[in-house]
Length: 273
Image (tube, rainbow, N blue to C red; front, side):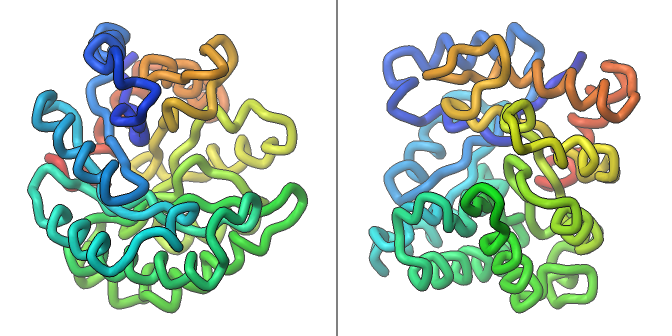
């Protein structure tokens, strides 16, 4: 089965001692593409450093909602400069998080808006983190409002820059059914991670069956969100195979057909072809 990891933080501290082995292990496991997203200026620069060493990897630069309040104008200017690099295929990860609240919500909104503006200006899709507290949906509803405000839907101005490609990727999908249907109707890409195996995420299976193949992605969110069988404290890109197998079973597709589709979708969404 061909594999991609559309979201693996291989520049994270947990891989500092053996990133080469981790990336090599992913390659041996059949992973053909890894998108290396960032969360702040330092990790954005590190993402570019690591993709310079491994040309089959791609970078994303941006500011995570947890770090929204910590990045000043100078730091943001550095990210804007990095975003012009051809090895950068996406902006993020960014988004909204009302679960852990490491940055005040107004700072998260300001941060999201400037990341979306950068994605639209560069034609590189925004990678969107979105989490509410268990049983709530305030972050999802606010994210949809912000996406529409920024023109990131089928009728919005972002389509002029992206054409048929999705202007954003919902990373590690989590949320109620109507939210999933909404972002699919908006024309966004959806990525699934090991989060789908956790209690309370049962709606993910229904959404996974609805995502058009050309906008369907799979990820690890390494070193986080380990699927069953993977080390709990350090997920790695090779373990994307567990969630990919879940996707194939959930969608009723053969692993080979799904794998070919995942590679094609990755290349389409990130304009890599």
